[in-house]
Every structure is written in structure tokens, then in C-alpha cells.
Amino acid sequence: MSIAVIEVSRQSVIHNVEYLKKIAPNSQLVAVIKANAYSHGIEEIAQLLADKVDYFGVSRLAEAIQLRNTGINTPIVALEGFFPHDDMWDLINFNVQPAIHSKWQIDVLQSSPLEKQIITWFKIDTGMHRLGFCLDEAKEEFYRLANCSVVCKPINIMSHFSSADDLTSKQTLKQIECFDQFIASIDDKSLIGKCSIAASGGTLAWPMAQRDVVRPGIALYGVSPFDAPIADLKPAMTFKSELIAVRKHKQGESVGYGQTWCCEQDTQLGVVAMGYGDGYPRSIPQNTPVLINGRKVPIVGRVSMDMIVVDLGIDSLEKPGDEVIFWGPDLPVEEIAKHTGISAYELITRLTSRAKIHYIR
Ligand SMILES: *Cc1c(COP(=O)(O)O)cnc(C)c1O
Image (tube, rainbow, N blue to C red):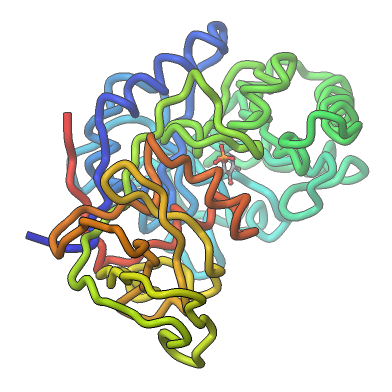
């Protein structure tokens, strides 16, 4: 029996995949399962989705190798490509499709002694300015990549939005225009493979960005890339633990490190087995709600490594062993994000291995 538990509903993940397919009916789907499937367990989520999606997306070659070693045969895209110290043979041996975003990668491929060909995703920078070729060099580099004998033709083309979560921003339309401009600049259309630009935000809010392949991550897990929850998605994760003590607490007494909270009236405090050692951020402010027996109660004092304290109120009937939910279907992680100023992405992804994952149907 573990205490801090990441409960994952397989059924909700499947529901979300089906929903994404429904709203992007003409696109293939890369299920992005990097960072341990946003803490939902990369191997189990891969097994669950292997015959339901077209690709898996990861950010490190090691993640791809882990998937292959557990028997996953689905195509895998390495969204950040191969890294300077990666072994090129791994791409062939484990059949991984890297993003190609830098000249140095093309240099490596040009001089590669590999015999088999690899499928690549040429990444252009349309405005994120993080990875990818900018428009003035992209065409030349695209042809250089196409001329590498180890590179499979046609070449897939990808980009990434910087602001797809902002429905009022002009940036997304500008990026789409830039993407299309690049594609138009390639005279030999037979070199152009599948095109992909949308992650969750693009898939959900910018249908014209869906193209051949969409790459949702967070939406698979039922979490919105925007501020508010999305009714059609089902949160897959319930992050929970339990009360280990209930204590009477007198008016004027403080609680926790630094005595940051002081009680204005007599009350009962609940001590919960949860802390930043499990990935519940230390910076979470007091008054952030948790759910106990269907009731929201506030955190008081500082989050410590292994415990947090909640104010149960003077009339509380709660007892040690009662379940405490930090987020889940009945307390959206988006609400906690809003309360704490920590994005839902970070909240779910930073959980530590001390929190054990349990799967439910
Ligand atoms: C992480 C990532 C995604 C998925 O992003 P979400 O916002 O979680 O849907 C898609 N594409 C790339 C290149 C990524 O790095």
C-alpha cells in the first residue's frame, strides 16, 4: 500500500484519444508520452495506446529505447532529434525518427556510415525561436538533408507553436503562414512528406493547423492546454494521499516551518502524507484547496518535504486514513494551476517516483 498515489484511469486516456481523433478526423496522431507520459507512466500508456495511435512522441532517445525494450513497435518520433552525444546506431537499431533542427545534425548524417535509411522530421522555426531552421536557411538545409544517402525520402516537415493557447494572439496565424511559405518554396514537391505543426493547443483551437499529423500531449491526459478545463476531455490522473493525523489546534498557535500561518480561532488540523518529496511543489501557497470527503479544505502553513497541513475546521469528523485528493476529475488541476500560478503542465509532470502510479480501468 503506497501513500502518495497517482491514480490513472486508462478509460479516460482512451476517451481523450478518441475525442482528439474525432476533432481531427483527417490527421494522423502522434501521442506525446515524453517525461514518463506526463507522470502517467510511459510504458503503460504506450501499451494502452500502441494500436490506437500512429506514432509516439518522445523528447529523449533513451525514452524511445525504453519503449522498444518493452516491445512497442509503433513508430516513434524523437521530437528534439538526436543529441550531440547520442549513438547514431540507436536510431537505426531502435527505429526512431528524429527531428532535424540544426546544421550539425545534417553534418553528422552526411558523414554517417549507416547503411539503412532513417525517416526524419525536418523542423522549421516559424516563430517559437527555440529549435528549427529559420526561413532564410531552411530551403538550402532541406535539400542538403534530402541529399544524405541515409535519409529516407520524402521528408516529413514539422514546426511548433509558441502561443497556440492564446486564442486572441496573431502569432499562430503568422506561424501557419510561415510554415506554408516554406512548403511553397520547395520546388520538388515529391520530397515533402507529412506535415505537422499542432500540439494539444493547436489541435483543439486551430483546426486549420491540424494538417497531416497532430501531436497532442497534455490533452491525452485530459488536461487543458488553456486556462480552463475542457468539458469533452476526461482528467486521467487523480493525485491523492491520506490523512495521517488529526489534531486539535488552539487559537493563536502557528503551524509548520517558519510559522507562516497562525490560527484565528480554535480548529482541527489534518496532517497529510504529501510534500515536495512527492512532487507537490513547496511554493504552493496557503489556502490552496484539497478535497477531503467531497469537501474542499485549505492548506495552511508551508508545504514541507513529506507533509502538508490542512485546516479541517472545528466541527470536522475526518479521521486518520481518510483520502485526500490534490487534483483529479472532481478538483481540476487547472483550478490548482490558477490558484498557485504553477502551470498544469508543471504540476502533473514534476511528480517524483515516491508517488506510485496505480492504474484503474
Ligand atoms: C511536448 C511537445 C508536444 C506536445 O505538447 P502538448 O502541449 O502537451 O500537447 C508536441 N510537439 C512537440 C515538439 C513537443 O515538444
